[in-house]
Structure formats: structure tokens, C-alpha cells
Image (cartoon, rainbow, N blue to C red):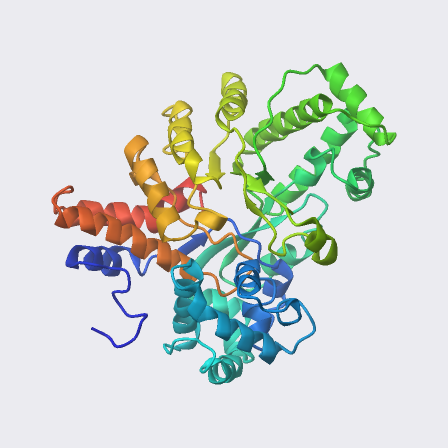
Length: 466
């Protein structure tokens, strides 16, 4: 056994798990079909100044852990030096044991920097120096970081107003890894949000369509969808508390929208009706374009009003919500399916109590037309850890076909997050290997190995037509 914490058989508990991982999963390319990487940094083949810039800045997972330990915000998002921030993260790491951050941290140090020493307060300075010496070289540029993990396809996430300048730049370059985008129009849906009308003014400018009616809004969004499609987009994404589905008439929606454009006040029923209408329109449009639609459901965002005011969104103040999901989601999917306008769909839940709801919901709309047409997405955000992934895999196995699953994604802003694919693959292989050893699955290594390879790579490649 290796003396290192991260070793060849990390998380693999028997010979069957080892064989599945090393022979069928480890060397499969990565299709990362949903993340929040910066296309500008990819296009410009950016080289980071030091390890803190790429690894700690922007990582709200790490920030939450540091705050919990009592570390001052100065060393998290404040004006401390990058070395000081790294030292404080190093101090935090030993306290993250049993949190996925402990595994991710040491996997990332090993895979990118060949550092197998445990990160802690004593080793932080030396590890900062070694990692920084590497990260600031061209061999560790953004494009080379993607090459290091055998990425084949990565899909970032952009708002309809984005001009896709950097995606165009990447497409014209000789970068061999495919980089695409997902269309995320939530700001056009959430009519009660502060700044909604200002956003529509920007959308009007970008689309060249004056937005004075609901019809205008749909025209502007459709024009942007076609623009995204012309530039290689084949996916959409939504981050919503829950799916909206209320009965409405076109006259109602136009009246609601015009009142909003005049800065009028809407009640909750009107808000939900509008959001239902625009979400249906978007999903029907995705079907026409042949896109895959993704729904990330269940986050309760910006809980700490004081810190949200100081630092803004996406800085570590979100949690799992306990929204009712099943009825509205069913009605929404049924409305699309009834009109033969349900495109390929991936549904992610953030509340683990909804695992079985999602695992059974997808079966209602897998109609035999496409393998795995409606997918129960992998463990997401707070659930992309060993327990969360295992529970998602078990729910899908028990109530659907895990063999049709399209596997893992990073959903990350970090260029060093791709070992999460390895983490997922090891967990998957160990789960199956354990059941082979216990006699719950046959020792049919060729077939189970094929299933592992499919989940790791081939199912996603087929599903997205890459």
C-alpha cells in the first residue's frame, strides 16, 4: 500500500472495484457538460499568477469552511496577500476531514502538481511555493490544465445578452478541446427580481428588438437562442427554486408584463403565471432547436442579507431549500410531452429528500424514443460528495436504469475542479465492486465494465451528439 493518502486505489476497497476503475473508467475522456468556467480565460490561454488565484479566489466551498473555523473575512475575500490567504486555507484543511473538501483538496494537489503531502498549517508555505512555481508557467495555462485531465468537451454557461466573443475566439483557434455554452435565461424569467426592467432594456439593445410586450420578449429571446445556436450552443440551463406551472391566458400574461414594464406591482399569483408562461415558451423553443434542457432545482439563495449586501451573490450564503417539487414538475413535463415538445431533459435536485421523486419522475417521460431521454442528474452542489453521489446512484438504480446515466459534471468555476470526475468514477466503481464481492451482482466484468465506461463517458457522448 502506498504511503500517500492519495494513491492508485484511493476509495477502491476490493479487487473488483480496482479492475473496474483502472481498466474501464480511469482513462475515459471527460465530457464536462455543465460548468461556470470563464470562456475569456480559456480563449486567452490565461496563466495564473499563483495558486491562490486559481484555487481559492471565487471558491465559495472553501470560503464557507474558513468562515466556520473563525477565519476573518480579510483572509477569505478581503485584502490579505495571496500567500496569507493560502496559509489560512492550509490551516483550515485538517478541520475539513469528512467534508468532500478534504478529498478534493488532496486529489487536486496530486493530479495537477504531483504534491502528495497533506496540506496543513505547517506545510502550507512550502506547498504554496511549489504549486505557484508550476501554475505560473505556460505548461499550466488554462488550456493546458484542461489537457492535463483529458477533457474532450467543456460547456460553460452564459446569459442571453452575452455576445459569445470568447467562444467565437476559441472556435477559430487551434485548441482541440471543444468548448461550447449553455443558454441561461433566468434573468428574463424571474420577473419579481430587482433590476428586471433594466435587464430587459439591455436584452432589447442586444437583440435589436424593442421590448414593450410579452410577444416582444419572446421574439428577443428566440433571436438570442438562434444566435447561440449559430455559435455552437446545444444546451440550456436553469437554476430555479422549483418548476413553475400555473394556468394562464395570453391576455393575462401580456397585461402582467406591460404592468411590470411600467414599474407596477405584481402579486404572487401573477408572478407565478408569468414565470410559467415564459418557461413553457423557452422549453418549446429548445425542442424546436433540438437542444438539451437542464433544470437545477432546490437552492435557497442569499440567506444572509447582511453578507449578501457586502459581498454580493455566489459568495457562500446559499443552502438547500425544502420546496415542493413533484406536482408542478410533473404538470410542466406533461404539458410539453402532450404537445410533443419535450426535448431531452436533465433534472438535478439539491434536496436529497427529493432523490426518489426525481428518480421516478424521469420514468414518466422516457417514452422509448431516445435512450435516457429524461435524466436524473448527478449529485449537485451540496450533494456532489461521496454520500450524495452514492444516494443518487442508488435511487437511480432502484427506480430507473443506471446503465443509461450520463454521469458526472463539475458545475464549477475552478479550472482545478476536474478531479471531481475521478472522484465520481472511483465512487461508482467501488459501489459496483462491493456488490460483485458480496454476490449481489455477477462477476461479469466485461458487461459491468462496459456499463462503467458508458456512465463515465460514452452515454454523455451519445446523448449530446458530440
